Length: 162
Image (spheres, rainbow, N blue to C red):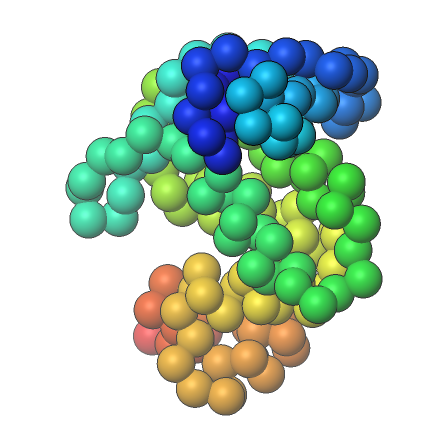
């Protein structure tokens, strides 16, 4: 493993232990060149996933991007980082177990929404505000009161109004 500080090619593992309920290995490493210490995680990757974006574009699935978006929604909330890590790992396992090489971005968003709803209601609404593209303050109250919102943030019309 290359040192992230000095780019030395060979680092030493100082400590290894299970993490995420055995789903990953946490390794503490030290660089013999600059003596910097850092942590790495080793996880099983069942298959390469591709995200099918709304515009039709394809992008490789990025676990770190998923984790950052969840952490942003949970920012300044009293949520144990380990619970966030477990939630993200659970979402990734569910995506890998779908058996599909291409996953629509909507599917990922819905899995995150379901998981955040059970984890923290404020983080859930924060994530929803970006995922559902809320445009006005009223979109928040409509979402919280249980009305369905279309993907562009506008309240969906009731079926009997059509």
